[in-house]
Amino acid sequence: MNTSILKIKQHKRDLLENHIKGSLNQYSSLFGCDSDAIYVMDLDGFFLPLNPACERIFGYDPQRFSKLTYMKVVTVEHLDRALSFFYKALEGKLQNFDCQVIHQNGAIIDVNITNYPIVVDEEIIGVYGIAKNITEIKQRRRRLTEEIQQREEVYREIVEHSPDAVVIAKHEQILFANNTALHLVGGKEKSEIIGRNIYDFLLSDYKKIIKERVKLVETGKIVDFIEIQLVRLDGEIMDVEIKAIPAIYQNEPARHIIIRDITEKKRTQKMLLQSEKLTVAGQLAAGIAHEIRNPLTAIKGFLQLMESDKNVKSTYIDIINSEMNRIEQILSELLLLSKPQGQKIKETSIIKILQNVKALIDAQAILNNTNVTISCTTKIPHLVCDENQLKQVFINLLKNSIEAMPDGGTINIEVDKYNENSVMITVSDQGSGIANEHLDHVGQPFFTTKENGTGLGLMISMQIIKNHNGTFHISSSPNGTIIEITLPL
Ligand code: ADP
Ligand code: MG
Image 1 (cartoon, helix red, strand yellow):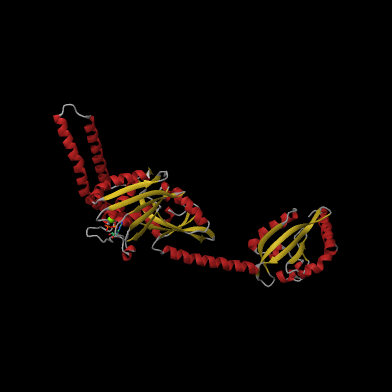
Image 2: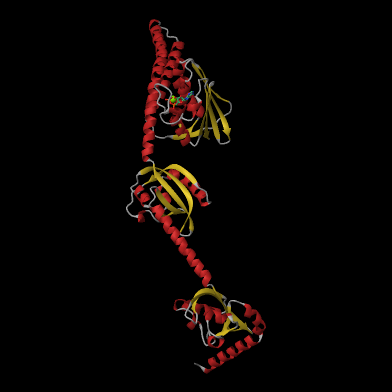
């Protein structure tokens, strides 16, 4: 090596030793109590121990320690890093890093090292070192990681063998899916779903509601089952119900999502609904036939009058027109009721729905000496609903009320705002009421006290209201029955 460089090095080494003997000496008792190894390093990286902790951590007495550098004490795997941190410190920057060193007795020790430059008269003459023994902390951390991994393994096993389809997702990404989930969407390899976006598998109509639920679960709340539609890998749409629970996956917050196939349930519901609709249509038919006969008789009479009278009176035509309209209205409601209907959600006036239902049911009501009134005191905004399904609900309720009043009476339908966001519809009759012991059973499928009853009317009505996110409440006394329904506006 060039002699002048050697001279500079020696000069700096002298400065360093003076610095230790001089300025640093006053701290020696302070260093002495420290459990961390405190040392300095010269420009070539040779150690100069400053406290007894150096011997405890590295295992070498001060004399032997001062003949060593990181080259000797740092493990091979960490050496490159340790040296690069040392050189960076020599360039004037504070460094902090974790690495492993080999104790003189061969033991591997985890240390956290801080290196920073020693500056004297604006010249860097060496590096300070503080090495903290973090073996225990590291071991504890390792044990914890192992434990977490084991727990995750158990969790994975449970999920993998769950009969429900389970998907674990973080934000929008699917991190894990069990075999049931894979089959549900019609996949063969997990790679077809893992890593993909959850919204790839959702009908876009549900995106908004799912987004809101994701937000809730991400703040630690559990959200209960809702019915939605999935898009399978082959593009087919499928009815499912899903629920999500906050979970931890790979050490990070995630969502545990349970998915159940409800295709079969939906199909049965549809069939029940249709058979009940046909039954109701059949039961109403007698009353309607009667109701239609009256206007037809009137029309016939007027037509005969008109035949004999050359100057047709416009009042006759008006009467015929209005009677024809009534027939048309009743028949179209009846047809609507018996036709199978797909879901049709749109904005509709609840009053209009009730008036249409009244038109259809009035035939039977009049036969039974029953009067149906609709009252509404405030202006009610339109509802977003399936009009035909709601009609079905009120037909069922009015039929029940008529049947509960064999001697006739009045059925009052009141519409009012329940609160800012919902409307309440109350249907009350003066019938015999529901016996206390039956109150728990009404609404269960096939529960009926009537000879020709189906026991499906209330069940289907409750189902429809539930699907509209509304509430359904029955109260009854020997003086009559009151049904209260709320529906969101
Ligand atoms: P169904 O009318 O075919 O019997 P529902 O589900 O409509 O089936 O009603 C179930 C039962 O609930 C009826 O059989 C009746 O006992 C009772 N119920 C329902 N509504 C009323 C009512 N308004 N007044 C008295 N009983 C009622
Ligand atoms: Mg009924």
